Length: 218
Length: 230
Image 1 (cartoon, rainbow over the protein chains, first blue to last red):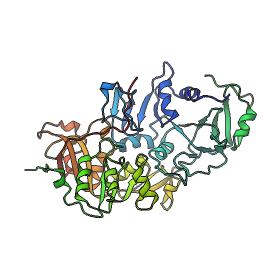
Image 2 (spheres, chains in turn red, brown; image 1 turned 60 degrees about the vertical axis):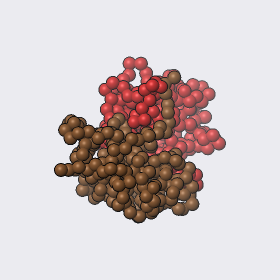
Image 3 (cartoon, rainbow over the protein chains, first blue to last red; image 1 turned 30 degrees about the vertical axis):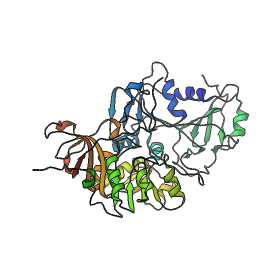
Image 4 (tube, chains in turn orange, brown; image 1 turned 135 degrees about the vertical axis):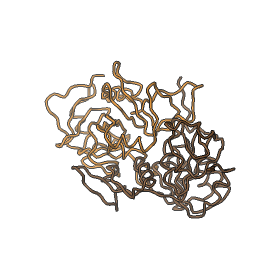
C-alpha cells in the first residue's frame, strides 16, 4: 500500500536532526512542522523573514504584521528573529539553512527539479523556490510517486520547465525513499508492502537497487 | 531644519509621472504601502512599471492599480492571488518579468547600494537564465543579475521620525528596507511619527539618508489568510 499523506509527513520528519535550521515548502512539507520527533529541536525559517517560526496563533493573538511565506498568520517561538527578505535569502543562498523540504512535480535522475510552472496553465511565478533549491545545504523532496493520471514523475530528464539543476539529494514518495547518486536514483527504503518491482514500474529514472531494501520505519 | 514629513499621500506622490518605475515594498498584503497605492489610483498615472514581490489581490494593494490599467509591467516573484492580473497577463495587456524571490531582494539591494550586477546560483539552468551571462566560480554555476534602480520607492514602515529614520515591525519588514534604497526618491508611509531622538539609534532599520518623504497614515492591514490554532 502506498503511504497516506500523513505517513509521508511522518517519514519526512525523520529527516530533521537536532539543531537543524530548516525551511519547509508549502503543502505536505509545511505539515512536517507538526511531526517533529521528540527530543529534536529544529529552528524553522520562513523566507519572508522569520527564524523561529511557531504554530498558528490563538484567535486573540492574530497579527497582520506576522505571517509566513504562505501568507498565513503565524506566531513565533522564544528566541525568534525577524529580518529582511535580502537577509533571508542571503542565509539560504549561502547554505546556512541545513535542510529544505519542498514539493515537486517532477525530479530527474540527476537531481533536477521542476516545481514552479506548467506551460499552458496559468503561471503564478517561482516565488523563492529557485533560490531555495540552489542554496539549501540539503534538499529533500516530498511528492507522489506518480501523478493522479498515473504518469511517472521520477524521470530520466524533466519535461516541465526546471526550478533547479542537480540540486535534489533525497526524494520521499508514497512508495519509496530514493537518493540521487551519480549513477541514478538509489532505492533506500520501501513503503510497507511495496515491492521493488512496483517501484521500478512507476519510475522512469535509472533505479539502483542494492541488496535487500529496508522497509520504512513509520 | 530637516523635515521630510509631508501632509498627505497625495502630496507625496504628486510628481510620480506616466511610465515611471516604482520599487514597492511588501510581501503579500503584509507591509504594503497601501495609502500611497491608493493615492496613485486617484492620481491616475499610467504605464507604470512596478517592481514588487507580489501584485496584491484583486481589490487591494497593487491589484487596485491593475484594475485601473495603470500598470504596464510587473517585476515579481509570485502573483498567484490575483484574477485580474491573470486576465491581463494572458491577454497580453500586462508584461510580466518573473524573478526568483531572493534574486529580486538582492537586485533591489544591489541597485540601492551602487552595485550594477551580481552573480547568484538561483535560476542557473532554468529559463530565468536565458539570455543572461553565466559564470563558474569554484566549480559552481552562477547567473549574472542586474541591480534595480527605480524612479521612486514606495515603502511602509511602523515608526519614523522627521529625519526619515525608519523602524519596521515583525514580518512587515520583508522587502521594504531594500525597496527603500532602490528608488531615486523614497516615500515612506508610516503608522507612527515620533520625536527626533525617540528612536534608539541601535534599532533603526533604514537610516534617514535613504528616505525623502514621510507620510503618516493608518493602514487597514488586510489579512490574506487568517489561520488560527484550534
